[in-house]
Amino acid sequence: MPPKRHLTARRVRLGTELRRLREATGMKAREAAELLGADSVQMSQIESGVAGVSAERVRRLAAHYACTDEALIDALAAMATDRTRGWWEEYREQLPARFMDLPELEHHARFRWDVEFLHVPGLLQTADYARRLFSYVNPEFPQSDVEQRVDHRMRRRVIIERPDPVPYEAVIHEGALRIRVGDRSTARAQLTRILEISEAEHVTVRIIPFDLDGFGGAGSAMVYAGGPVPELDTVVRDGPGGPVYIDTEAQLNRYRTRFRRVEAASLAPDRSRDFIHRLSKEL
Image (cartoon, rainbow, N blue to C red; front, side):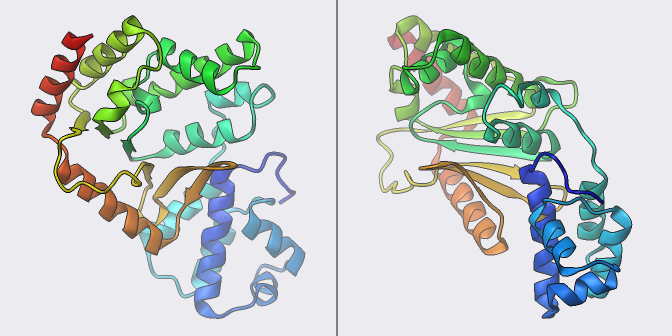
C-alpha cells in the first residue's frame, strides 16, 4: 500500500503493536518484510505508521509471529481496515495535528476515564469555561482561533451525549472546581453542567476533597481510553510539547492502578453530587 498522507496516532499505534509482536519473536524487520514479499524500507514504513497495511497482511504477520491472541489479532486487523473520517477531519487544515488524534481515540474507545486536579475535564466543560481557558493560555490568539478550539472541544462531547454513549468516569479534585477560570457565573454554570451530566447512567463523577487525609496522588492526572482489548488501551497525559500517548503494557498497568487508587480515595457518586451542589451554593 502507498504511504498515507496523514500520520495519525491510531495508525502509529497499529504499527507499534506489529513491531512489538515481531520483536517478541526476535525476528528482524528484514525477515518479516520477506514474509510479505516486501523490503525493509516498506516494513519500516508499516511499523512507523507511515504506510498502511491490509488486514490480510496483519493476520499473516501475526501467524508468523506465533501470536495466538485472537482478540488482539482481530482488533489489529480492524484497525488496519478502518477508514473512518470523523467530524474532526473538518479541522485538519485549521488546527494543529494533535487536535485530530484525541477525538479519533475517543471515537474508537470502549470506555473513558479522566483524572483532573487543576481544570474540569474537557468532556465536562461548558463552552464559556473552555473559552476562558483558551483565551488565557493563548492571549495572542484572535477570537476566531479561540472559537475554533472551543467548537472543537464542544464537539468532542459527542461520545458521552450520543445515543450509544461511551461509559465515562471522571475523578476531579476539589481544586479544579474552585479555581475561578472565569467569573462567578462561569463557575456556577460549570458546576451545573457537571451535575446535569452526572445524572446520566453511563456517567460517574467523583470528587476528591481538599480535606482528605493521606492523599498524595496529585500527579495522577490522566485521560484513559479503553481499547477493544486491554492491550490496546491508551493513556494520554499533558507534556511540555503537547499530549503524550502512553501504551506499553507495564505503563498501562501502572496507570490502571493509579486510577483505582484515586477512585477509591474519592467520594462516592451521591456524596460527590452533594459536594458539588453545596459548592455551587457558595458562589
